[in-house]
Image (cartoon, rainbow, N blue to C red; front, side, top):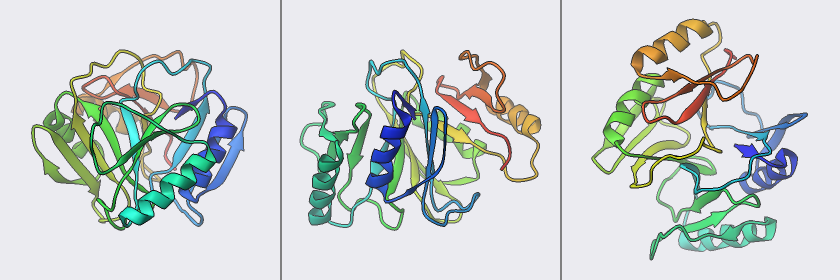
Amino acid sequence: MKARDDSALGSFWAEALGWRVSSEGPGVTNLEPEGFVYPDPVAVCLDLIASPEPKTVKNRVHVDLATTSAAHQAEVVTRLKDLGATPADVGQGDVPWTVMADPEGNEFCVLDSLYQDTGPIATVVVDCADPRAMARFWGQAMDWTLHKVTDHNAVLRSAKGVGPYLQFLRTPDVKTVWNRVHLDLRPYPGDDLEAEAARLRTLGATAIDLGQSDVPWTVLADPEGNEFCLLAPG
């Protein structure tokens, strides 16, 4: 997640998720659950990266937070407002979830017990034009299991049946700028970074240049142009 102030936004999300700051350096704040050990799929961790560019459009990638009931949902919404979140209107109409924005305007939803046993992040949602095509690419890119696929949406989750879901949601909006919120993939310990990058390109990913210069990760885009980073093996 790009941030104008990674430390401040990191503090918000750490409090929102009940996580800890696992590491912090110039321009980067990393969050993960207490006791988390990669590559445990129980969580999708969050990295805040300093970026001066302002947010100009609705994010095409966002997180949905889990709650256990309508009462719990109301409690979470109140707590998030106290932390600095604000209600947001993205044209959602009358829905059972609450749409909010973090202190830098990044949209997220607070669900009403739609997903169970996921941890605080219920699902990561990616807007797209073709959920079926996205499910094919990401289902092969990750060792996650496809739970549902229609013309409207596709849902994946870790093959171990734990942690958050990954959902591709069909929307009419067209991607116009690079995504302030994006996915990072990391090969398993001992895997070869270049071999994994080649495999992803074979699946349909493309290499892109965002001006990242000499960095230890590889920047790619999925078949719909959503940027993602392939990190060095953990």
